Length: 114
Image (cartoon, rainbow, N blue to C red; front, side, top):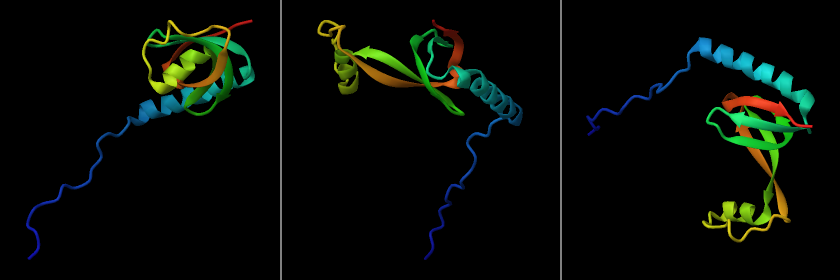
């Protein structure tokens, strides 16, 4: 005998506002135009949450700015392993390059460093 229980119908949970999506595409395109000529240049970036990063722009696509940052080796290893309390043990002479993807719409200020 077939089950009489009703299965939930798939439905849209969220649909972006077409006006906002159009503005976002315009913003992404303009960010790529602004940032592309500055590939491999050193910048300071402030995000909308107040976090600040310094590094070299190594890539820009439709959604992300890829920033190469220098990180002390022990800090990078601790971050990868999830270890706590790395500050006391790290040495500042050993560095590792890390690529940090930053979401374009979170970028508040980008300053070119000489």
